[in-house]
Image 1 (cartoon, rainbow, N blue to C red):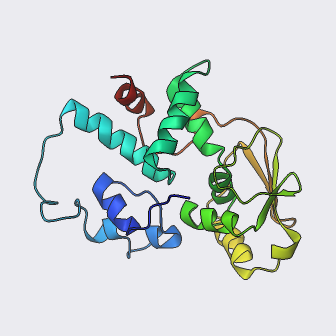
Image 2 (image 1 turned 120 degrees about the horizontal axis):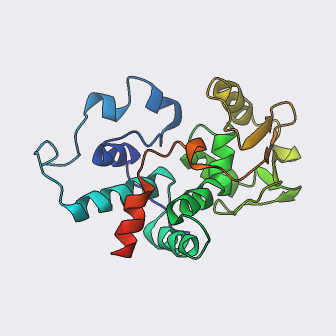
Length: 208
């Protein structure tokens, strides 16, 4: 299973926005973007004017890295979204939001999508009562995501839920913190997704 193993703070600096890849650290003064708000590398502080292609590319990279998806899989998501009715950009965001690792993060069981991916792979979660260890598992409306019985005593999960209480849960999800489970209520609308991108530029990038 392919995954990015390099320094994640470097990705935030490259895109110029917080991708919240390190959980609580991203909200503190230790955030790399707070300390060095310029691109990494030898020429990171050089001023460059982006071309039209460069703008489209950066927007695609931001969205891909925001959800922790690599290029080939991201392209498959786009191809599937382009075959759906309605706006391709919104369909793409819905598919990314309904990934199991993202929903685990949104429900507050993990402090970041990166950590959520690890927890899912280690078998801590079930969907509708069945164990699922695939981060890319696509959830549907009505699906219930729960912490497995064998994992309910894991201190990290409880701590994450307690810390995430202030962050809240998106309106398209429902969380039961006592039972350590959540439900997908509806498909997420664009105004309910906080992805800091212009998805139309991503559509234009692949449509060129």
